[in-house]
Image (cartoon, rainbow, N blue to C red; front, side, top):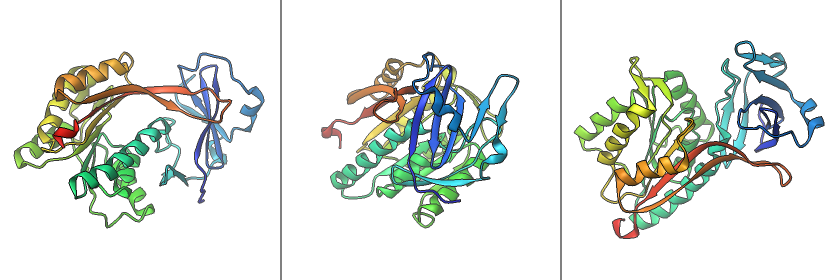
Length: 287
């Protein structure tokens, strides 16, 4: 089933969000949507719903295609429902994809060559593919073999199977330490560390304990002409200022910005915050 429609937030409220992915409309939990829905009748159009009331439950999952394809921000992505309620895309990151693509194009002009982009905790590859389509040399890393294969399949959907993108299944810390020893460098880095996770060999990752070490390793693999480092988070308490402070302490002088990741809909639809981001950009004198 192939669909050529963008993502859209249709409504939110009462602890839920209503989203359209192509022709598939889904209602899923969203704790921060504490207000009332703006369009209650619209929720009846949901193709399926997911909740966590008594475990993890899809309702109407049998009505959904086993998988389908959407195009968002010029990137084609394969979607499929998972037992945890995920689909293979986090729409709140779409604005970051667009910014990364623009920064890669500008960096190519400034450097005279394709920037080297590293995506850590990279999931199904949306940001990697946005960067690759913009001309970056990409390295995509995740500890889940299944997610890396999903990302590799998405690359093929975008005609990027021969782009030279490196798809790697590994623990982030182990990978970065090897890259430091090898002297391999990157011009741009995106990382979305989990609140809690395990690496390829069961290595435990807790963001409060490990994020500083991860950032220190990222600093060691940055090139002499870096473009940016973006840190994102869905961890409660990791506000935009927390991310900005971490980046400033680790990478020093540069342009620092931060904010909330948002789900967007039509003009009458309330923006829905879903995580935070911080960005460090090198000063032009550093490029």
